[in-house]
Image (cartoon, rainbow, N blue to C red; front, side, top):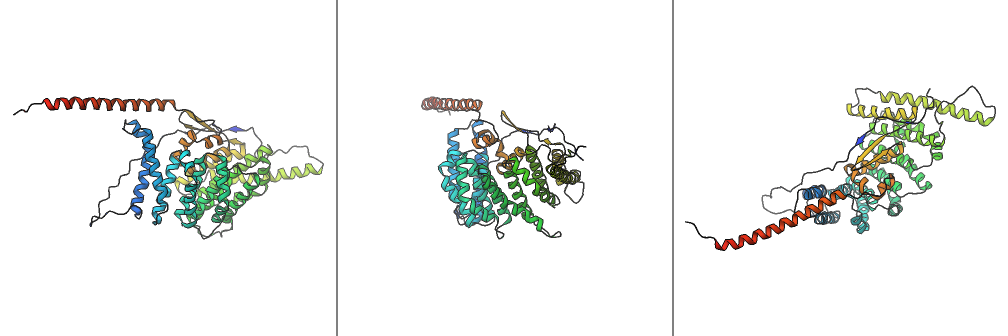
Length: 469
C-alpha cells in the first residue's frame, strides 16, 4: 500500500533541441505526353501534388537562400511565399477532389512551418470559408485537412478574441460532425482534435468546457460498449484516441475541486481503457488518470494515499471521510497493480516499438500516482528553454506538437498566443540574424556595383581590341 510522500520531480530530463528542418526543392520533371499537349493546372491532380511539394520547399528554403548569398532578399522570398499561398487558397475550390486535398495540405504545412499572423488576418474570412466549405461539402481526407486548417487559423491569428469568435461560429457544426457515424472516422478524429484545441484557445467558461468534454466523452466511451471479440479498425481506434486526448486537454483547464469530483466516477472508466488493443489509447488513458490524480491532489493533498492512523473518529463526518479514503486507497492499489503490469509488459504479440513506448510511458505514470512525482522536461528552442514540470503542461505541449509537428519550435519562439500559454513572455529579438541579413544585403550591393564597373571597363576595351591572325 503506497504511503504519502513529498512531491518530487524526476531526475531524468528530456532535452529537445530546436533545429530548422530543410527539405529538397521539388521540381516538376514530368515528360510531356505523346501528343505534346500540356495538362491544365486546375484540373490535374499530379500538378497539384507538385505544387504541394513546391510550397513546402518555399517555406523551408526562405532562410537557405539568404545564407547562400542569393540575389533575392527576405522581402522577395516572403512575397513569393504569399503568392504561392494565394494560389493554393484559390485551388481549394477546384473540381478535382484530390487537388483540393493537396491544396488544403499545402496550406496546413505552410501555416505549421511559418508564423504569418498578418497574412492570415488579412484573409481571415476567405480562409475560414474555405475550411467550412471543405468540411461541409468534402468527404474523408478533405474534411480532415479542412478541420486541421481551422485549428491552425486559430493559432495563427494569435488572439483569444479571434479564437473565441471561431469557436462560437463553428462549435455547433463541429459537434454534429464529430458525432456523425456516417462520416469518415479519420475526419471525425481530426474534428475532435480541432474542437478541443479551439475550445482551449477560446478561453471558454466552465459550462462551455464541460459541455464539450461530455461530447468528447461520448465518443471515446463508445469503445467500452464494443463486444469483447469485435475487430475495431485502426481509423476507429484513432478516433477514440483523438477524442480522449482532446478531453484530457480540456481537463487541464478545470479547477481542482471539479477534477476531484470528476475522479469519483471517471477513474474507473479510464482504467477499463487500459485493456485496449491500441497502444495510443492505452497511453492516453494512463495520462488522463495521471492528470486526474494531479488535479485532485491540488484540492486534497492526501488523495489516494493511505493516511490511516490508530485514532478513529467517532462522529459521522469522520466515518464518512474514512470510508471515502479507504475506497480511494483500494482503487489506487488496484490501479497501481494494473499500471505495473503495463510498465513491465513483455508480450511478444505486441510490436517491439509499442512495447518500448508503453513501458516508458507507464513507468512515469506509475511514479506520478504512487510517489506524486511530476515530469521534469526541458525543451530547448533557440536561445530559450521551456520547463515542463506538470502533467497538465506536458499534455498541452504534446497537443500542440501534434498539430504543428516540426514547426513547434518556431511557433514557441514567435507565436504570441503560444508563448502566453506557456508563460514565455514576449518574443526575443533575434539581433544576430538581423545583422547577418544586413551584411548579406550589403555584400549583394557591393557585388552589383563591382559587376557594373567591370562591365563598363570591358565595354571600353572591347572597341580597342585588334584582330590576331
